[in-house]
Image: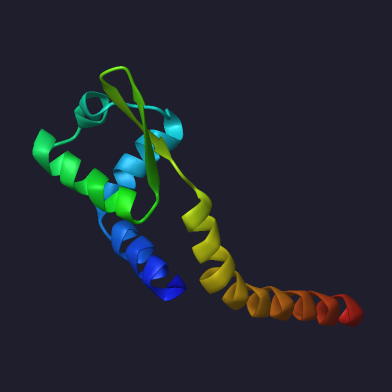
Amino acid sequence: MKGRDDDRVFAALADPSRRLLLDRLFAENGLTLGNLCERMKMSRQAVSKHLAILERARLVTTHWRGREKLHYLNPVPIHQVQARWIAKFETDRLDLLSDLKTRLERKS
């Protein structure tokens, strides 16, 4: 099931409009659909569809406050992707840079 979750996160992050929505929630968490539609160059229905994809990827969670549905950024799936897919590639590169620095220091 983990691979499927990762696929959803990668697919959700692939769209610039969805990344913009995540950026807006990072800047100000707990926004309504109406708040999120402001400054977006798309219809309310399109924003709602993007939010549904972000919710399926668990990147956005919601909470009802009376009649208002508030949207919150959930950074955990991004962290999981970073830990599983990005960090392992970065470690080798950082080790190489560290070795290079050590070698250069020995020569000076």
